[in-house]
Image 1 (cartoon, rainbow, N blue to C red):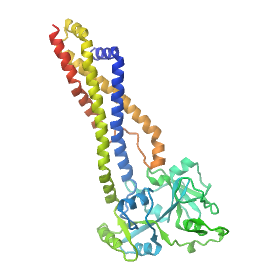
Image 2: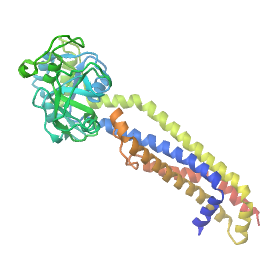
Image 3: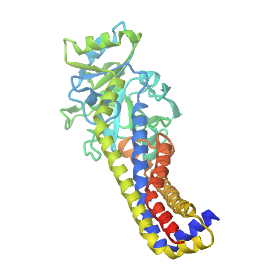
Image 4: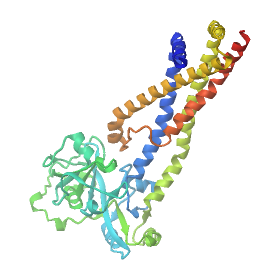
Length: 413
């Protein structure tokens, strides 16, 4: 009876209530959206690489090295000599190493040259190993293994040929069309930049650049791909490499030795430490977004309070009738509070529904464009706590009109 009366009262003022609902829904959508995407982005970044003790590249900032070597964002300042890589990888404290060569692309997706050790040692999430949904790892010079997103978006299957492009531009006219690759494997979805990467051998990277010089294809010069010898295609340089150490105790010692390497300037970073630096830099932006979202919600709650306070004068006759039939002043106080709670609950349902639909429809775009895999579980993180806080804030915001109704009820008889 109590809820039915509150519902009918709101329906009688559907114009102003609808506008309040819209304002509340948008504010809840923004607040929960910011919080959800913030948590999901952190989880997505933190799960990208696991079990790697050090990442080594040319001398640069730790964030730049992390971004281009792991997240395929940005470009390296320089390459590393192959002899340097071999010298560091042969260190007795190094258990395994994975070289990385970047610089080419295919229809906007990055190409990464590496070795078969990449599929053996690379981990993501909670030290999960890469698995194949179809095919196997590359073995020939012109074999390519696709990330799940690349295969799905471009419609590739095993055995399909593809041509790599020089550079990382989404549209490129510098194609390695004289040496096409063949798809031999497709990886399972990982929710990391691996899904948007094409993996080829280091020999394949060298082979397609044999008739190139300083980024330009040499005219009239052709290479017979059938006569290429994999043993002769040793790279001169690579972009970066990952290291797994035999003992965690040796991490800082190996890092110091690499940073002081005499032959060429190198940087060795710990992925976890570099990620922490990234979140510290992003902290101000995160707090600003949360503050803006909170202010939008406060504005919506003040609008709710003002709307309900203005309606008290219009409802003097209703309040008088309720008092005549025996409703105590406390009943009127609770009625106004219940109406506010019903508006808040409806706004929460609308806001959550809108957020879920947006995450569902924009998920592929965020994954393909930014490498962010945002889940649709909108009750993750602190969102449940925020929902309870919204209900509490609504009760507080409705106290002024509720007390006004209580006072008018006492004065009506």
